[in-house]
Image (tube, rainbow, N blue to C red; front, side, top):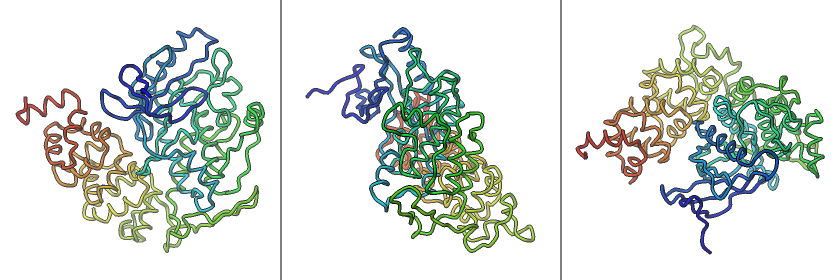
Length: 477
């Protein structure tokens, strides 16, 4: 069977998913020789003029393409083909949160831990912040649109129905776009929506991950609509800090709904707490029906540390002079994680004489949290810590920093094996973005020092100006 070719370059390989707004394909880009996710957006043949709807779909895709964040899938292109809008997105190899939840319901041993769900929620929240800063709404946040790759990086995907902030959730024909069970009440009611609507959807998504089922899904669409708009919050069978945060998102009135800043603080507090011991990583709870589960109990405070003092003063000992890094590693990481990133970055930035210890402590934090600490450190200090970590760990942390921050760290490291290993540990896409901010002379030496056979691909992925400068420096022009 001959493969379908779209726009003369995208070869459809297999269907990744299908929904009310279209079909997503795994496709091969014959021009750039890479796999992409290709979505054909379905436009209903009624309501406002089809030409207007096509133009709007493309403008919304282009707005979403401006977003740059490690947790938001990249949009490469948007075009019309055979009368339908198509969106070309980065293809992420991984498992959807939806599949993980499905596995959770099938096996009692694979229940997602509160910490794991919190980490996913925190990264999606960071991605949504970037989306909202660009004045775009995702409008389809749900477990199926959250992908976790083999390196445990989290991605928010599928901007097929994204909308510029401030517009109604209804089309001109009063059709709802999206998945009703994850849709905010104000969207169903046809009111103007904003970032709070995406936060409601995130709350429903986290509820699904925590409890293992969709709280508002009913036997018919009409019953599902009634459940969403009834104003009755669902009951939790796994109470705790995460459940409390989710409950704050599932408030019917957008004005009273928990905001992103407060949600971020609550999720950070959970992540900064003591990690469960190995035998506690799988939740001991067994559930056969509503109300039969028991909350997994965890200890409070740092391991073996007694009461924890004010995190803002965690770098001081009882006499004001003993540094945080003199404490046991896990205790120090717990305290560091509870500090504001700026304060934590300042503290580690001043620990030049203990960079090895500081690197060990920083490496114990979740990568997104560690990345926010690095964001507030001088590049040369951050480079010392990154260079002291295993390449896989430092790469996973730098994957969550801004491209310019990562580039500054590489520049501060210079042409050393640690910098080369960091480049080799990045994906080609990520490395090209980062190297675009590194001085061409340094890029040239880094590429010549790599041994993974990707130097030519990395060079091809850089801008023409950078390539020309590298050619001049190396005598290739």
